[in-house]
Amino acid sequence: MPRTIVLAYSGGLDTSIIVPWLKENYGGARVICVAADVGQGSAELAGVRAKALASGADECFVEDLREEFVESFIFPTLRAGAVYNRKYLLGTSMARPLIAKRQVEIARQVGADALAHGCTGKGNDQVRFELTFAAFAPDLPVIAPWREWNIRSREDALAYAAARGIPVTATRQKIYSRDANLWHLSHEGGILEDPNAAPPADLLVLTTPLADTPDAPGTVAIGFERGTPVSVDGERLGPVELIETLNAIGGRHGVGVIDLVEDRLVGMKSRGIYETPGGSLLYAAHSELEQLVLDRRTLAAKDVIAPRYADLVYEGRWWSTEREAYDAFVNATQERITGTVTLRLFKGSAAVIGRESVHALYDERFVTFGADDVYQQSDAAGFIRLFALPARVRALKDQELGYNTPAASATDEEAPAERALQIA
Image 1 (tube, one colour):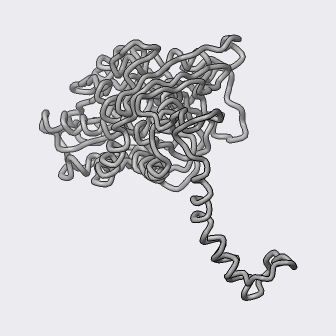
Image 2 (cartoon, one colour):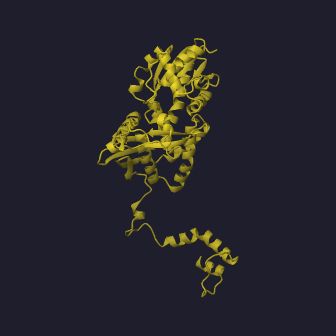
Image 3 (spheres, helix red, strand yellow):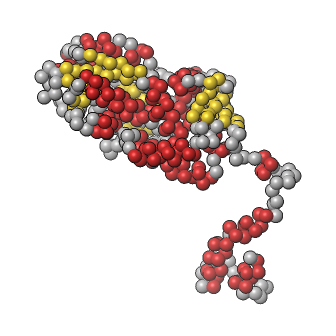
């Protein structure tokens, strides 16, 4: 029987009822809560320590992890171009390994002999937390109440909280499961569980509904150094402030809302609404700057790595040699990703209208339709002959074997192979 349990605590419905449940079911063990500030906002964190203690926790650590979250998790994932299921920018997925690592550090600090989390047995977060636990605390047992207790629904959880006088913000009428951080806000549950149901008008929090966005377009210029965003409209900003600023700008114009039926790690599909205004602007700008600076082979290689990186993040495999290897490759591609991209924002869209970089491979001297002295157009004939050689050889073979190919000219007296050699 564990004597000290460290719980990943958010102050939401699930973790609020877990504190007394652990006390009741684990012989009065000490329960230490760890609440991570990853940018979910002051309203959500307000009074979180007092609430944990009022629920029966023996202590609650509130840890500010915002800067580490951005620099060590968000920016590497952005630089990799990782997008899951074609749309999802991995907001929740990135935060969990960081929170779990800090939870383990607190557990070592207080001498805990067990770890606990409030993830359900149907979701992805249980895997993300426990893979991190396995990487940093393989000796500590894990308690996952949703896999043990007889509570089977949000309604059951609300009833449990009410019976013990535990205040929660969820209600039976507005029963969404939300996860917020600097990067995004996710919404699941309630009417959203019907994939054919339109999201309620009052659902969005970070993003202005399209009907209420400005009727005139806005612009924003995002500056990058070595693939990392460093400025907005020419003003250098710290990592946290930069994302907060872009969230406000993108949110005002309704940018970054996705409605996704995603593939959960455990095998089922689920439906969620994700708000990622600043992140959507950063992905659009970063991708465009890469298109300007990288050669096509490097871009193609990055496009192979990106979905694998996304899978890795989504599945909680952050602490792995695979991720370190991908980061090494991505870092090499980002050495010259320095420049500025300008976006036009209007009614939910973010269109690229300008891009510049001293490392741009685009050179007007080569692509101009006007007169130039740097490109000999006659050189293209030899290039095309060589580039087309495999197709010509195949066509000649097909003609010789009688395959269905265009017939040779009736006036041509030369054999196909002899004619080809003359052309070459």
